[in-house]
Length: 249
Image (cartoon, rainbow, N blue to C red; front, side, top):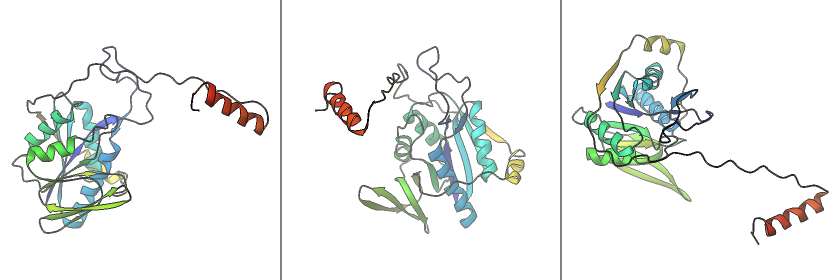
């Protein structure tokens, strides 16, 4: 079995984001970059399949040289090889889906795993688009995956219960929190990763469906107000504020 895991590099959730001078991108200064957390579940699932079924795991990322850190981490965790597709348009999920589809076509992947969305953009679109471009089955936002002889059975959470999706391989599967518990890289894995090379290829020329025209941080929240007095007085003051200022009543 051959598995492709698509990984995206995103800013750490604790990073203080700044808009760059062009008003259309993030200022990379002082930004700590990490693997998108949802992609971590996809990678962990691939490694578990490797351990359980002897699968070959290929980690892939679309981006600049900076994305090599994401791929090095994947190698340290247990991926067999890594590929960097160098190109622009990483903010457009359709462009990224086209780039990955162009690479994956005819390479014999039985399964393609990725996070259900990339942290920050939260488009939740690349995986389904990739499946459509490749003409293969898909299951999205899954929390459980079972593979049979050329088949898959996936479970996804829906409002009030769960849904089971079954289909034939090859397939694109997008992972949700709860699918597994991602591991940390061991010292042995980190040392082994240093001996592996990352294959670098130019991304295929693709059609960009969306462009960022402007990027802005949300307005700062106004300072809070401390209500004075005892509990009854505070309750009365809160009720009055909701009525006169918030216009709730």
